Image (tube, rainbow, N blue to C red; front, side):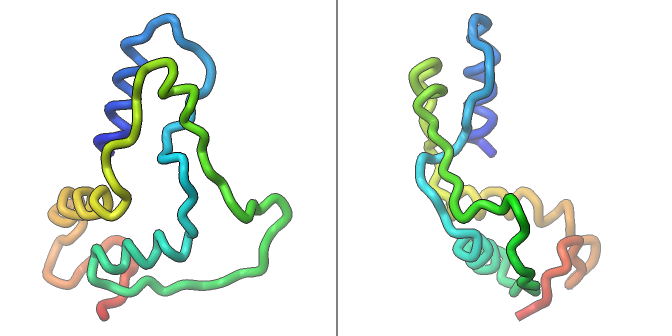
Length: 109
């Protein structure tokens, strides 16, 4: 979230900019790898349901951040797993109401 906030502030401060800007890391991460990283971070296993691909599904999506970098100097500073850990530490007290209760449907490992 810090990277996203930093990018937004930089864009807001540059009043002469317009159009869409990609905020990403210039590299692809497989969805199953992201899910695995989230599971490792929260210490719980997600219940995955695999469905057939739908028309319009993309096999890969890598955001090109050259435009925002050129316009503002912004580059991502936080590695995915570090960002997940920071986000989880912020979220924990907000989603757990009682010991063992979660708003995300994670099953305990």
